[in-house]
Amino acid sequence: MKPQDCGPRYSSNLRECANFAVWTIKKICKDIGPRPSAGEEELKAQELIAKQTGSAADTAETREFTAAPAAFYGWMKIDAVLLAVGALLLLFKMPVLTLVFSVAAFICFFGEFILCKELSDGFYKKQTSHNTVLTRKPSGEVKRRIVFCGHADSSYEWRYNRLGGAPLMYFSIIYAALGFCWNTVFGIVCIISSGVFAPSAADISWYGWGALVFIPSYVMLFFFINNKVCADGANDNLTGCLCSAAVLKFMDDNNIRFENTEVEVLLTGSSEAGLRGASAFVKQNSEKYKEVETMYVALDTLADYDSLTIYSKDMSGFVKYDMRCCNIMKKAAENAGLNLSFSHGHAVASDAAAAARSGISSTALSAAKNNSSLRSHTRDDKIDALNLKAIEKGIEIAVEAAFLFDETGLSK
Image 1 (cartoon, rainbow, N blue to C red):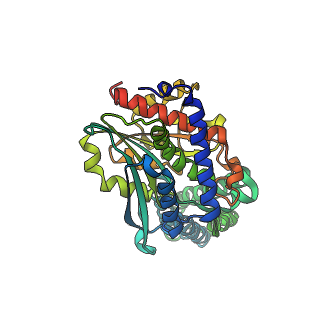
Image 2 (cartoon, rainbow, N blue to C red):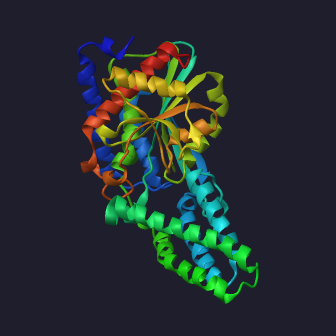
Image 3 (cartoon, rainbow, N blue to C red):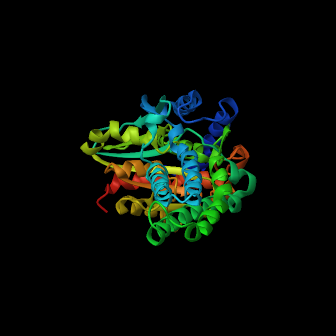
């Protein structure tokens, strides 16, 4: 069976599913509000989505995991201090220590933020977070499984995205990055040209004074995150959660149950804290997901119809997705009337990156190319920012992908 086999109700039912998604998003934003990683609101949102999905899911299971959500963005404050102290050390003729602090800052940034490794969790408070999985079982034996994923938590506000949009946000990042480069390059130059511990004042003074030019950038980096404001996250990423749940609703409304393909909807927690929820879930289910052919699809911020794209890479290009999954999504988009290109997710990554890193065949569908203009990670990511057209098309592509995977698996 294909979606079109549902008859003339196919297109109208998709609109009903999109309306279901929007209505539920509005209810979450109104009744629950912002959902910090590992907060009780995160769990309440998962429970409400499970309740609204109702009989479309045969089972709904919530699992706990432990995370230190503050550690993820904590690198910004750590790096701000390391780089500022490194600049002062360069001024006071200690280039070796400047270089040490630069290396430490880079490891913190690259490991914690780019690769989403839990490097500094031991220094932060541990909290209990949750993942919820909704399952629609096949009528027969499980031979395949497709997982649609969205994260239920929302981000603390990115201060400069709110105050000045993309120009100010990128300025703050590039400004600090140039300061890192200055400390690193001229730390090395001073060591080579002037000696390690006692370079002459003439050789080092202008390098040191130049390093102070970047002190304001470290102050900006320190205050990049506004921990007093958490976004509603209507687009990022309640759209992903509800578009995933809408796949089950579509199947239930049309009395569709695959014979051998299990359909799961994963609602993760603490994704805005470095994919900690998705990482915990795939770790808990790695053996299960290896038992049968599994395809994992993250639906992430379906907010801008014109920016719909399929990720073939993620995590700034350090994670490659299974092209068989990407091709299924591309074919699904073609069936939905779109010719989507392959793109790649920049920092921060989608939940599918955590699955792919664990060896699970994965990809992601997103519509957030111009993330800063979509008010993502700010208090303005509210229900009035929702795009019904993007949500409906995201649901249609996901439904088509489920049918394609049921028909062919990953073999084609």
